[in-house]
Length: 160
Image 1 (cartoon, rainbow, N blue to C red):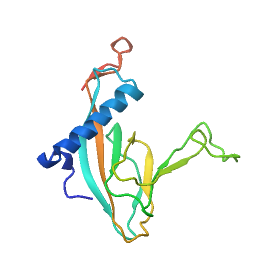
Image 2: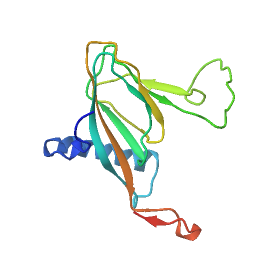
Image 3: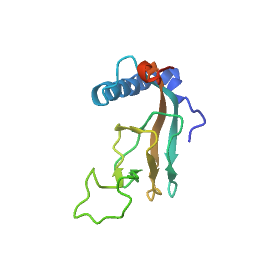
């Protein structure tokens, strides 16, 4: 992990920060359909480097709403990021004829240079040991809400 946890605030990375923030806004407004009065802003950002036999253990990102990873290296046999989903509606270990997005408990994505993946911060994820001589490099970040959330009529309103 880089020594800075606010790496996107460096002036020389302002174009990259603007790109990431634009993708967050597009995701929240076009896919999640969040009200425009709600904004997600980057709270932390850092670089990860994984050399030979290094990995990232299973974890999530507390105190964050949406997290992201931007692949700054890719190709070859670099290890993927794996997302793990526990589904309380399926507490049984069922046998499926085929795994898909609705029944799989683990999905993984191979590193593709320049690809940005956004995901709920509560989602458990990890990276298996890097068995190559190449360094796996990513930029990661967390976000939080700014604006009014909840519903005044339901007494759940909160302005952040």
